[in-house]
Image (cartoon, rainbow, N blue to C red; front, side, top):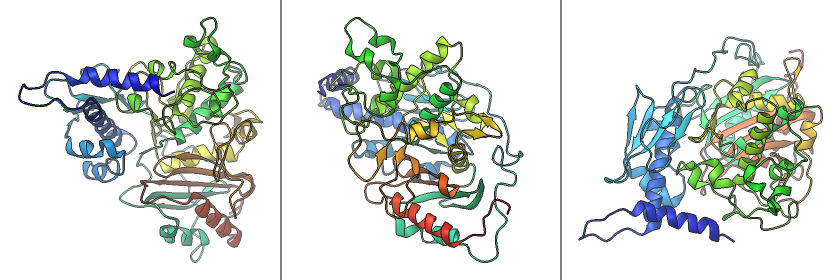
Length: 465
């Protein structure tokens, strides 16, 4: 059932081949497309790394963002050169002499937009207002008073940070929030509180949060069929798929690979709507679990349509600013559809704020942003479940089968080792960011168990401390 995407990939590759010199042999379509996607990957990651959050120097981008990636494009990503235009906030990468460069442009408020293959500069809206500066506000809205005053002697949490090597992977940040304030915060590799990294699939939990906010406002009922215009033709079986089934990875839709890699969107600059709505149904909805980027992207399109019907915009930046997450950049395609399956850049502290919203059961600064049952909804396994050590709720993973981990622990998981773990029974939020790869991966269950053990051995962080 991967025929449809295979055909689209072949057509895209055919369009990229162009004319080759008579004496040279034309590259295979797959290699040519991979090079175009590699150029898009480099443009996108350099753009977002440079200007989202506190920014990173090129040398750090080369070390962190452009290594440990898909093997079929990594050599091209490393070989191609990025032309950075600081004035225009634009990154261009030439991959062929007879085609326009791949371009990513920074908007100022919603990160970078990767333009489609063949598009020229200026196709993305730029110079949107910058995010507000809330750093001087009290924690958690701002950064003032965020940390517990250091207790006498080394804490058990600090020992966990010292021992990070035994948990595996390549860590860039570890942050532990206990009873609402930061009990431990460590950074490696030149990172700091303002360094934004790509969330990868932690973005799916952010999408679930935005949907939860719309539920609280009465703008969407996730148990009803998703509002996808392309599925409304008479006789289309996909019209019965609900937003909840999309959130639970139980849509029954076709996906070409495990995880449903969305290269055409992430690296090719393809339209979210064009790419996601064309997949056919393979299984009855709610009959099989199949982790898929497209399901989250489709749930976000349904959210956007529901909000539009209610006379409201889908504005992730405005929502996250309400949480003080002003260095969280939700990026979108050239048509303005958000890529909330993976394409979000944020800091460790902003991820801690997201975790606190759930640890506080949807309350923020005395205001209810998520309905009273939303945390229970997203952390309840309902319908088909994945194989393996972790269960799945609605946009969040469940750690209820892990040794030494409380049964109510749940989290947002992202590729390359991005994690936000929430344990309400212990008033704990754990954030870990990294640059893991196939050779070195974090054991998140082992880390969480160690933090829980440390919490049990150290009572110096109390509500009144």
